[in-house]
Image (cartoon, rainbow, N blue to C red):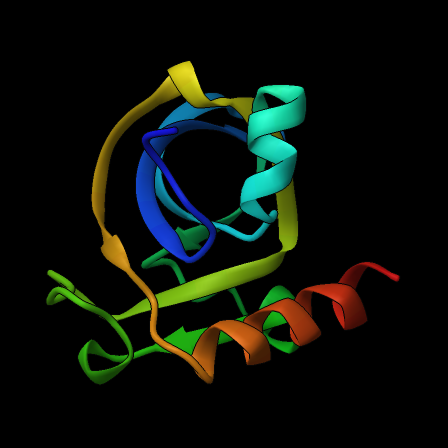
Amino acid sequence: MKYHQKDIVEIEFPIPGEGYKAHPAIIVSNDELQVNEGFVYLVMISSKDFAYSREYAYQLSDEMLSFKLQKPSFVKCQLLAADVETAIIRKLGCIKEPYFSEIVDKTIESIF
């Protein structure tokens, strides 16, 4: 297994109304799912701050990550996708605790 929960990866993410576009995303599913089923669940990261979706966004800062962002970015907690590990382009870094747990909670709150 090459990727793990909390990893931030680049992947061709399905964008509503736009098709697929390379975006960073956080792997939120646990490692066991990837091993047993061969896919991961991810939430998208974007630098776009849309007013209509701010209630679903989680703003990131460099202190939360194992690498530096190139521009201000937001986790779009309402944009969850499932994909196979082989679709991942590359690993960028990872997100630290407790920020990961806060993002999972916000994703659950945003979707359910």
